[in-house]
Image: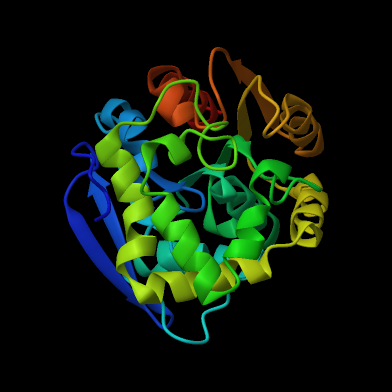
Length: 288
């Protein structure tokens, strides 16, 4: 079960050499591509898309990060820069002309890598709270790199995430939101790891490939990013506000906005404000 949200638009598929990417598309206007994090999918963006789809073409894929239902083919590269290239090739396959790219959580790290390695493929960058610098993965969830490496560990992880009490623990989703994520959305995020052996295989490859060496390299290359950027961060410690400030200082044409009363998943806690900030940024930068 994936993408339970009804505001994302109809389901489509695009085939790449790595496999099939499932995505939703809705709205008309300049294209915006969204990138979620691990053990999540396009549903992360449902509240934001509900606001933006009146003015933008919103593309929300289920990236192969553990909340997807269509496994990748053997040989897919799950390093940060490999996933960035997957995003770039998806944008090209969908024939999108330099969309805005919006990321959250692990997806924000992937977006940094896209901006660092493939700036020509996008027109602007939006980073909400996400992995950066040495914080990849954040300490409270680094156990995922241990559990995710073996079939037994993956089974334990997948089965325990079924429980609402576990979902709200700091070692799961508890530090990501101030408010509980709806049960059907949590089922959308966590169900694929239980239901699809191929998804568990992909996730094992992903966690083996995570290293802060990649986020450090991507951040350094952001010094030459030639397009405007919005850093829309929340006051929390999972992805420290200091990292948002540091990213805004690295990117030449960046502006920092702080979202109050929110955990790192600003799209869950403050979707309206997050959408308003993205809209204002895109309007401002398209008029330059």
